[in-house]
Image 1: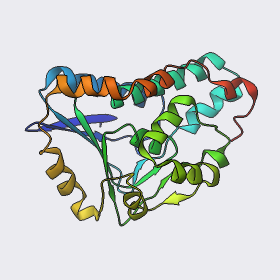
Image 2: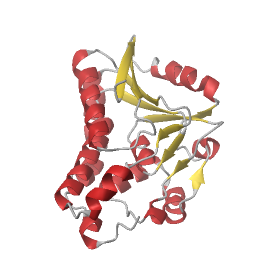
Image 3: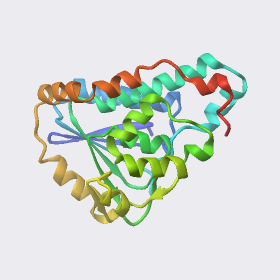
Image 4: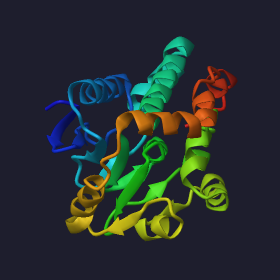
Length: 237
């Protein structure tokens, strides 16, 4: 099974993440971007829905089994290259000419939560799963682009609480704070997501131009080429 695959339902492309807990490593990032390229270049889809094949996890963030040995070997070039490629994944999602919807069908933790913030809209499963950024406990301070994405999707006061405490939010709490559009039981999640997705027949060129005008600050933050904690020793997992 491919790490990432897609199907087409009229004007809606449905991307499925098949990499277990969908932790980010070079192979998974490359597969995601390759499939996004295919959808954008080979289809006329106007809306993109992203979901996970895992029954309880949307994405659990960084693949530490891959990253920690790189850090421990002091391979600064490889480590920085990984974070740059992760930023590219965030940028491609944020700036897709299609409107994008995350169907969060389970836990969205750490980098998985940040990834979720790059979508234009989010729906979340209400009967299982949390939205959480536990980097304060992992010893991974947010990079500028990560902060920009989180601040885009989460109200400032709630984000500060989440950032400094590592608090987990339920789908109901995410909906109450406008982080997701709707909290849905798993039996209804995809129906609700699809109903919304199929209502969004907006032209790609218009959407892309709007995103360029709205997201300039986030793009500049994602282009920052400094990953200070890799060299400073504050990556303390």
